[in-house]
Length: 165
Image (cartoon, rainbow, N blue to C red; front, side, top):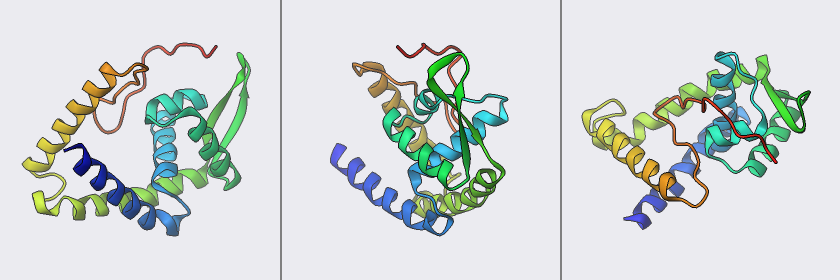
């Protein structure tokens, strides 16, 4: 079963990257930008580490993506006045426009992917979503370095964060 999940994830990742390429995004950069947009909508200006925790991506990968997105004018990185090792992130108007454009691409692709189950809002698709989320939560709970698993789209930030050492 793990092999099938892995194969499907690799195929879906490639499709998503190709679909978002005209917007100058990959699936991972869209995830970072969309997550930053969601957090910003809640009045938060997260650090790169907080954004990594929120997305489930590795901190070094988020740092690389943030540099690339900053270079494209989609987000801004600024020193954190309370922690000299941290950078705070802010989405720009250009980043918001990219998220808005990407959202339509992502939803249309998801609808096509889940057509065999009756579409993305079908009972079977929602059951699959719940089952995958349960497996992800279990995997995270039993990992040596657990990460927070979101409750469901969009993910919710942790109430408290540990300071980086």
